[in-house]
Amino acid sequence: MFNTIGGIPAHPLLIHAAVIFIPLLIVGAIVYAVWPRVRGKIWWAVVALAIIGPLSALFAKLSGQNLRQHLINTGVGQGALLTKINQHMSYGTNTLWWTIALGVVTLVVVGYLWRAAPAGGTESIAIRAAGVVVTLALGAVTGYYVFKTGDTGAHIVWQGI
Image (cartoon, rainbow, N blue to C red; front, side):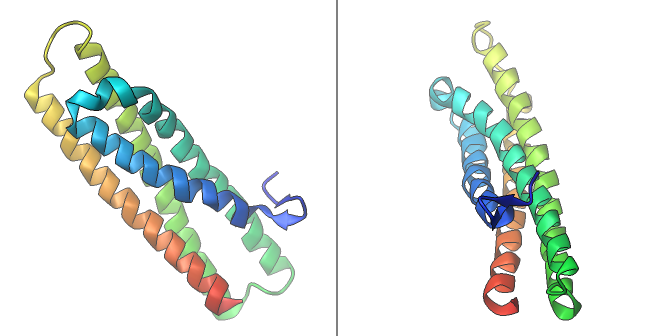
């Protein structure tokens, strides 16, 4: 399923979705968590990104696994190049898991704050602070792995094959 699109390996095409939607998720989640005035305007986009971001990471990972196997089967992916591919794949796996974690926490934060606001109640400062801290931390770690995954992938393409 994630082998080719129009005869071209799917991975280089699908990673563009991850490169766009995961950073948008990071920014959207942080803005939603720290800026109460915009929550009513962006909640729907943040919820959509909390779903689309992890899915784009999953599709990038699955297509990358297929591309790796194709390179091994054709004899291109071996030796030092395979080591680089495996490192890139490791970063991609971490990106997937951290993006899922950020997506889940984002949905919880949006759900909690959305529920608290219409009820006329003010959200607990401690809970809001915890949501902000966890969102910031997950955003930073997810951003790091997106960068490392992209950086190692770019080095493979431009220096390895």
